[in-house]
Length: 276
Image (cartoon, rainbow, N blue to C red; front, side, top):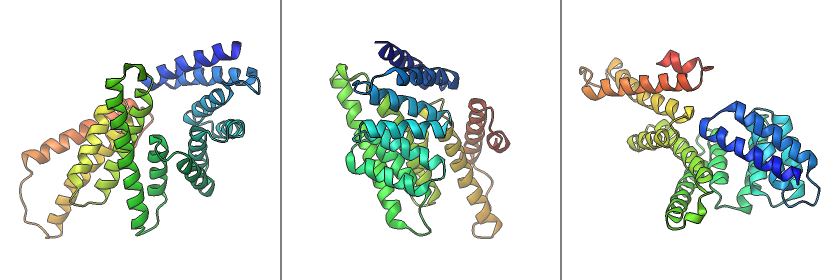
């Protein structure tokens, strides 16, 4: 069965791409998935997995129209595919179709409210498109992110007890990193008494995914915002002047190194090296 061989080959390239964050490897995976999708029979048990994998790679590579068409086909083949639904929701969101994305996220959530990826991406959607003062939506999103972290923790413990579940780590690991990053950014932006907890979330995400740019950049920004807020209070006479402390200098140094690391990982970014 040639389509199965191509599918397995594509999966190998996709795993390499995940480990090294390599778009070239992912492009090879997408090409193989596309060939497999053109060969797979309509009734084949692998069809929905092949289509979903093809759509996932196309989405990550920014081929949104291709991703949308492929993922729609995957849902037609298997209406109960939760992964195809949240991937299509992300695609529609990337294309600016907010209403469609919201419906798909809700459908995926109603189908499986214990899928960490559904929880983290739906939560991000709710936070990104919340209105001014929509506290209830913020509470719902934060609870979703915390639930995703709990599910990831349970899966991690289960892996330790059951070595047979070795295929799970990459799936849950990335969901956990997304949840930590999103939760950290949200808590830090609120400028509440939980700011230190937000920094901890972001530091954990950086440690978990050393090659990911988003947690590094978010952590660096949060550190500098905290320092600039202190300096701002001095400027407006709301606090007594004090020389920068050793902790201040340490925070500045850490933030600069995080911005620089982000720039090294993403050579196309202009903001990160400027902030560094």
